[in-house]
Image (cartoon, rainbow, N blue to C red; front, side, top):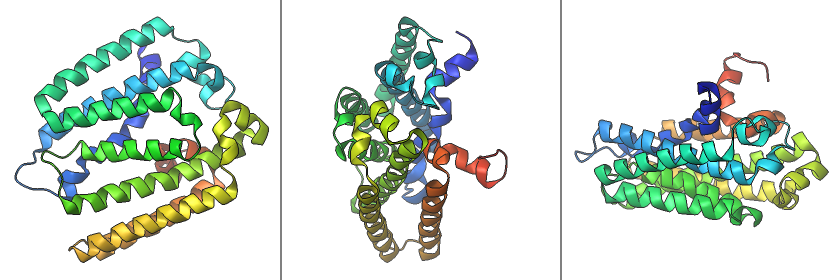
Length: 267
């Protein structure tokens, strides 16, 4: 197994999602928080994320082989064996457990809950419409919660609800993008739950998520948050919705949005 294959197996490009761990440090900073333990938490959460990606890729390898973008994944293409993938996942889990005992019970409990929910999703919950999106959004909330040194207070709940709403918005675009890229029949064959994500359902899901994000913004602003910063963030969300609607490939891999914005790659 070469480094390129290992990087693709771990989905290192997806580690940007775990930057949410730093959200409490940036917006709710207090004397109990320190940057360096959070940096370890970031790499530890990235490791547990990669282990769940490996497991999910193994389960979905046959379905992924039918997808125009996912068929090149190492397990779907047969580039790496299942045994080698399990060994890598085991090493990652060992690192996470050691880090968890050092970082404390809040982080360890959060990362274990994340691992449990992600595996429940992989082993069946992903087939239940809407619940699949709620579980993914909840995992993003857990990424944020992993950055708390102490049990979060009431104000932190609005940051968590913002992350939950934002994730639902992006997921509604991702579901529709899968259908647009594959066509309705192939999309349902690839992932049966997609037949429930009609345009009307996704618009309604998006509307509810925007209401939740707006409410979170209003509460944060009333508690001393920057109105200008929150307004810019909300406008950026609207911008993302337009971009993802017109460029479904960006919704499938959101990290490419930065390259698209700055003209570093063709979309």
